[in-house]
Length: 525
Ligand SMILES: [Zn+2]
Image (cartoon, rainbow, N blue to C red; front, side, top):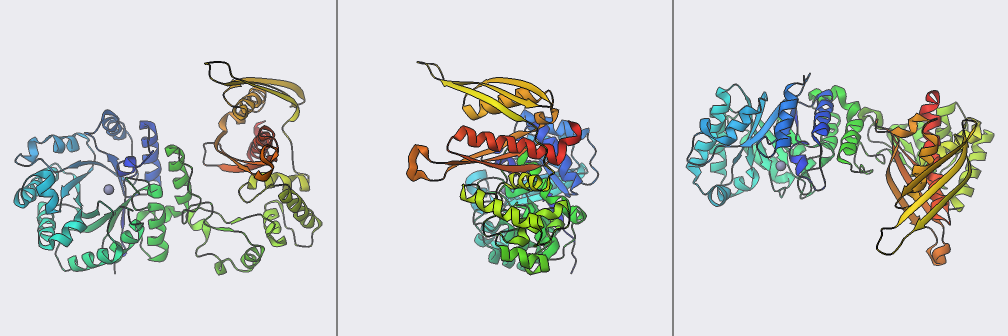
């Protein structure tokens, strides 16, 4: 059986319909560049008729060179009763000047009747006329059959008529769409099997995740003979999203042996997933298969022990195949082998080394005080550096002073000043903000940035507070977690604990900067 497979990305079209998803024009161009580097076969750029930003994307994209991907514009078949060569939808598809076009047509007679308000014969003519016109203009035509699976269950013979008509009109690929996402893999398998005896253009699939089965349906489609699958990076798209390419692609390659062009770029998948999350301004789902930070994380000391013997005993694939990394989570459960694994970055250590026992002791004391390092590896890394004498602080605090005030009818504000020693000098920073943590962060940056320019690259992406012993009410301890990024694909997490939320935040903020400094930016200082 042939193992060819084309991967079609619709992050920039269907993906844009997702809740809270917004990409600027610049974001879209950068994402397209990354998709090309990933050797994704098709990039659906958007719907050129929908707004000016979409039209501008096609203008910009024309100036760019793509080494692998074919960029496509998206639109629907011509209107009922008209002609494709004078139809505004078809004209917009052609004006986008992309080598590929995706034309979407109705394939469920209920939609033909109720939405298009025409009959099945005219719908067939609309499809044929539209595809033929686009083919005459030399376009590669991807024909999306909207609501195909629902239409097929209603009237399979009409569905087949559409497929035959589109094949004859010259469509390059026929994409069966589960537009409302309501169908299961068993039906998908049945439909592709039944169609395998027909003499049709190559088949593809486009699945939505309303039943949580978009990836499963896509896999059922390729196993049933589909050679083209559409989806989005991280699965974000309309409603519950589209088939998640970050899960589908490694499954197709590593589990089923398919060989799409992106196979030799598979180790870039995790960074692509995080890049798109960064552009969407969405915190990546840690539990996402393959590319999530938890995908190869292990907690119990025993797990870490087994991993040290043979990793295939605990992991379904080698994390590096998809560009992810194994994480040994730190906790009181962690045994010495977990700590040895953490130390391996700095040299070869064994369970009997003094530093291992010392670190386990520190970990236990800190955890009793309320610290947790499973989600704050960067803070733990600083503890390791301290134990090994490899830690270099960037500042020493003298004092900080914050004053929050609120007056009648004016918004509340915080004024902050900080005095610290860094770079062998006494420094001062000041800021005015809304909340105390934001103000303290800004004041610290104000003092440090002239001496440590790397700080300007770093920003916080997430800030979480947990009250640890709520029975003590306002005297309770709080634990603060901070996630930071340098906007170059690196993210790291730090933790702080204190009765005072500002002090807990201060600790996590300083850890964040010191971690980045020690790990990446020492030479720049
Ligand atoms: Zn869709």
